[in-house]
Image (cartoon, rainbow, N blue to C red; front, side, top):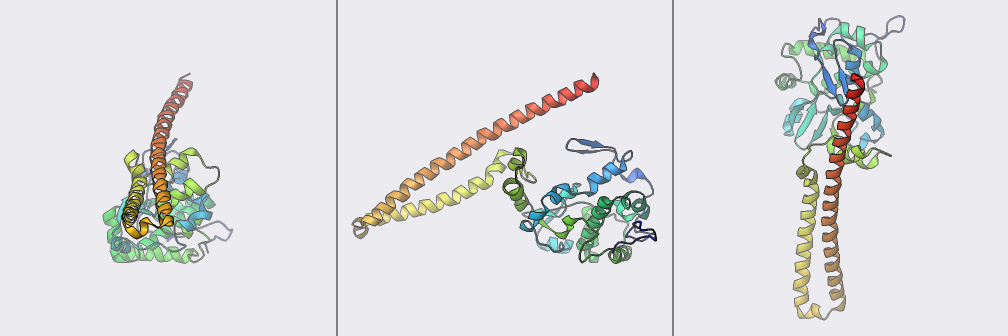
Length: 321
């Protein structure tokens, strides 16, 4: 359970002397741009913490996360390396522990989570921030469980080089003693799941969420590329596999029709004719879908860019007026 003071106020779940002290705001970014938001952390630390710790997108689809991952802890960093995964840095907490193909996104552990004073001043007062901070710190208890994991984390820029294994082990031990790491009652619900597969998150955003925006349908949870070639890559690869299967089948039917026995088989002739017509129709429809979707995406992106430019222009004109 979370530590509570005699009057019921939350206490930091970390030791008073952590492995790294954040003595000022100088360790924070000068400015953060996130979509349409601009935040100055040194002037508005709470606004910055909301961006840096909370996971609203994953919490919004929490009931569907079982499709994207297991309700289990994330594998430590040395296991990630064994799986051949590259460790990619992200500063978006909604992308932390999201993996695709041979890469996994990891958010560096914010230094203020290692500082007792920051917990008292900025995190313990808000339940949402407290739970989000506990969840992110808990994920590092999963990732850095051995001395080799700590070395990997330092090399990848996830943890500061000044932390030694003895300090980290003691720090995490105190943290785990302060929270209920089994039922995660003090952590954000997103951390009920460890690693999440990006392709499944994209599927959830495109096809499962009710009344979702057109932008979400087109881009999914996270777009891997803005190139049309990447967007159509999976579609074309799937079509090539189907076309290869159709080609082999049609060749087999053609050979069969050339044999005397099957030439006299009326049912085989009808089936061959029907399959040939169906294949031609499928090819025409597939090409038409690819072309029409390209036209739609082209005009969607063009009009979206034009609309956003007009919107920004009106806002700038209003501010100057």
